Image 1 (cartoon, rainbow, N blue to C red):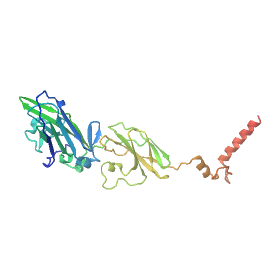
Image 2 (spheres, rainbow, N blue to C red):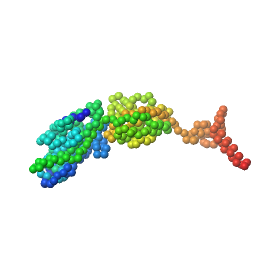
Image 3 (cartoon, rainbow, N blue to C red):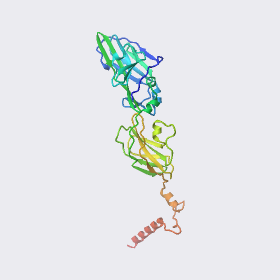
Length: 331
């Protein structure tokens, strides 16, 4: 699904900084484009909007700053945005940059955010000001779409010069990653917790893993849950890790049976569905003194008599040691 763009309200601020220039041979390297103040998830040089953070990330305002560091006469610069692979041609925009959406052909939208005849240009904007859709609509048809921001330069005094900066990419990623198809490989009971081992997921991009537990028979996701919370299906007591390993889940109740699952996250922050479950029951652990007392040993040490009606393993051990010592003395 291609996300359409809409015209920006004319009330959004545009800051133009005027400066003078002189002629020289210009190159794309003379154009610098930066983005600041955003709340996007970062992975390398790419910025992501996830299904779980859609509303907050789309509404968060950011500032685009473009600078021309070369020299030239009678030129114009524009901040532009497109959902195509490359910057829209200068001719696509015509002479206007008046918050109008331009058709780049083949389902490509071209948008002029601001223009100037100076060396610097800046605009503060949010994706919610541009996208002609809502997070609810995007979540109904999960897809991935790349928006590309550019600083473009055009001079036409004798010889036409068109320059384009490197792109700043914002990826609208609403595709959950592939869910693990196997259950955790082992679940070991510990005091008030479980140690869970699981295998790495080889299919698709994996940025991190999440291991979760819920009591057997507990209900699934709460009514109205969306995004990652819906995919958890009511599992809580979660721990995250960046690699397949053994994870300890804590805060569980001893003697209660739990189902344990794990899931993957991609770079955008989208969560997969749960793996098939495994089961485990946290158990109270004993040190030797606790075990000894549980076998009717005295609370303050010493030796205990064997329980009536049965043999004491501890007593048999002591008798064995005495027999060994006596046999050594008779040699």
